[in-house]
Structures are given as C-alpha cells and as structure tokens.
Length: 229
Image (tube, rainbow, N blue to C red):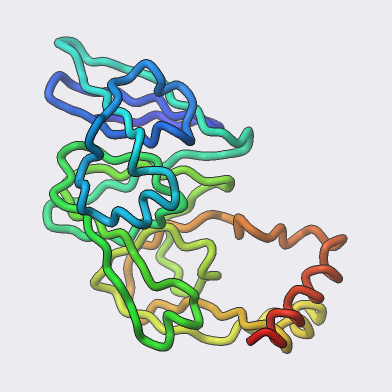
C-alpha cells in the first residue's frame, strides 16, 4: 500500500490482497467504492466514530489483479492528508476528528477512557486506539508534522504511541496579549515526559494565531470561560 500526497488530495495504490476502509461522508471521490453494511470493527470505539462520521456509511476499496491507484479529495481547499504507519503490536491514539480511514490489516481498534484530573483540564477523555500492523489515514485543515518535540497545544495533537506518559502545564507565551488572555483562560499545554514521535497539525485548527483582528473576541471568550469554570 502506497500513498502519494498533494494539497487536499491523496493517491492510494493497492495491491491485489490489500484493502482500505474510508470515511464516506466527509471525503470526496469515494462514492463508487463498495458501501459497507456493517462498519469495520463495529465494537471498536463506536461512539467516537459515530460522532465524527466515520462509523456508518464507511466505504471499502480493494486492489485488483494489477496494482490499483485511486484518488481521494478532502472537503477543505487547504486541507491535507497523512498516513500513520503502525508496526506490528504498535498502538497509537488517533484523534477521531482527523480519522479519514484505515487499512484492513489493522489488528484491533478500541476506546481508551481516561478519568484522571489532567484529562479534565485537557477536556479529552476518550481516545480511539489502533493496533498495528497497518495504516491509519488522517485528514485535517492544516498540514501535518511528525515531530519529536514534547510540548503542544492539545488541539493540535493527532496521534501518538499509547505507551508514552505526559502531563498538563500552564502555557508560557511570549506576547503580552497572550499573557493577559491566559490569566482568564483554562488553556493548558500538553507535555510529553518521554521521547517519541507525535503527529500534530502545524497550526491550531480552531484558532488562527496570526489573526490579530480576533484578539479582543478571543479574550472575551476566555474571560467567559473562566467565569463559567
């Protein structure tokens, strides 16, 4: 299975014995593929997949006698695809928001639930976990990066190995405006405590950090969030 990426598009090449399941509702170019009456891994993280539209109406594409190549487009003109390759026995958290599909050789899929206090600060409790070997196809509004950095905005994190440890910490921005906003916000930074690869979106998909025109509105939202808390 090979992937070739370009802006808002991925070309997928399959051999005869290879298959991939694709999120039918949110991608363009999959209508002619086989519709699945039963979703793959029906007990694997069903709530998260239903919430993000990657459970029902999944599509399946398999290779032919000769290598079969087909193209998939996203719904955002500036969007990007990326494939996370999992080695045998390797388990990765993958953001349900970014899930676009996965190969049929994925060994298992389940939900890992977190109840510790740090996850309340992150506002993240349910993590779909994929176990390799295989590929997980992801899609987002921003470009993806695979980095060994240790500190990120939680909203940027897309996939990482389940064996890694992390903590939450208060952000320490350099700009005065951001420092004032953080006095009234509940924002935290996700810090990994051990080395490893983390797949992240290059920019926060929910906030454009360069949009100074929204700075005042962002401050108001942060203050309201502080009062609500």
